Length: 136
Figure 1 (cartoon, one colour):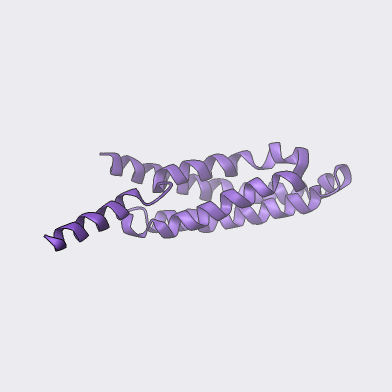
Figure 2 (cartoon, rainbow, N blue to C red):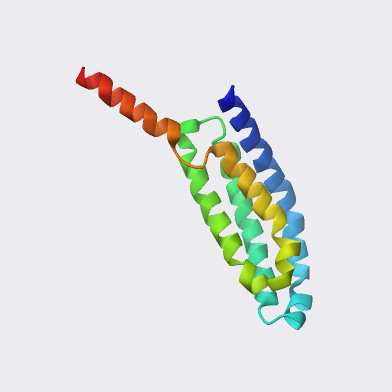
């Protein structure tokens, strides 16, 4: 039952990532001029946030492609970790604009990571069990 709920959560968060990414990309690109006037690195940060939303489309597509294959979800975790780390690093260049541009990205990435699992618990447990059975 938990695997089915995680699969539903990963599919839902992937679809939401795809739906939110394009409007947020356009909004981040429209904020570049205003942010560059108000803050030193604001324009660069808004452009990088727009690029992060493009990358979130890739992460969402990977989540949809591998949602039913738990042995392939490691490939889904890697872009999500990269996306989460880059979003946290963007807080400095965005400054006050981080509160406007990053919440959808951070929330959906965290939901996505809960859906695909933060680390490989089941896969490593399976390896240990099969290895123990071979010795007997």
